[in-house]
Picture 1: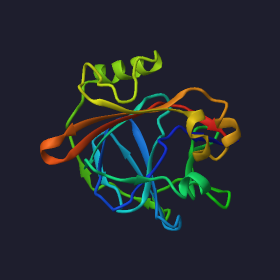
Picture 2: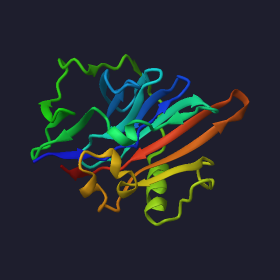
Picture 3: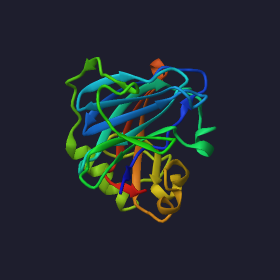
Picture 4: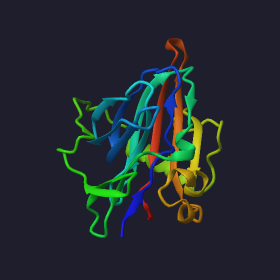
Length: 217
């Protein structure tokens, strides 16, 4: 039996704006696909690794850690326009899943599950690394507040000054999972996103936390 990891919803930038991701902590499978849902890539990265989003591609962050939150930061233009169509109807053509032994597999839309290894044509490699750190206590506070229902969209997070832009439960994004019927029954929080806005240079410095967990397929 396979399980699909918790992940962010996934979108693309309509005008192809740049976006740079950095893994603050945890392990990530960063899945991307072209607007036509044909060309696909997956980047496996760990703490400190940095990589670019492919312009115009749909992209999402998958937490492949067994028990640790995945924390990423990203830089993107303040006025970035995003789209979810047709991903919201057709789903990603590739997904990252695990078996009962927690081995990683790439699940292709044709229902082919193959071990996720470096020699797969979809796999990309990380070229850059950063040693910038974020206080883990801050991350823990954000998660705790979210689980207690103390984070509200549009509000400012007191300790960081970041604006809460997203809190998603699995049931809210069921269409984005391989097994939407099961995902619809899960009320756990999948991810939390906060945005630090740098108005003087028209940039958003985002911070996204994807909690550990998986949905049975």
